[in-house]
Each structure stands twice: as structure tokens, then as C-alpha cells.
Length: 63
Ligand SMILES: [Zn+2]
Image (tube, rainbow, N blue to C red; front, side):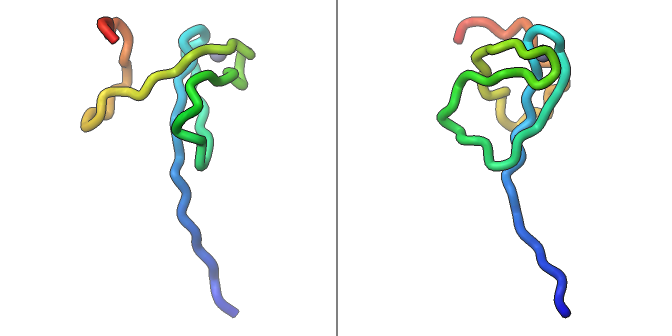
């Protein structure tokens, strides 16, 4: 008997409307619009600034 392991890329999303988090394993990186599983809001999401584990990424403009 042997255990098994695997790796996955886990992407964390933060809803712009209800502000709740959800995560998707191996989410396609080129997909820009997602439904929030909490409130059902359909929204465009953008990648958060790299190198920083921002708990809040609001108020970033200019892109
Ligand atoms: Zn939501």
C-alpha cells in the first residue's frame, strides 16, 4: 500500500459585491469572468499585485 499525492494550483477569488472568498483548483488563467458561488454575482476579476499577500486590494485604479 502506498499513499498518493498530487499538486494543484489553487486560485483564490474575492467577490466585488459580497466580498466573500472562494477558491478553485486549476482554474483557467485566461478566464476573466466568474460567478460568485455565494451571491451569484457575475464579474470580471483581475490578478492581484504579485509579491504581496494583500488582504484587501480595493481602490486600485489605473488598470
Ligand atoms: Zn458574491
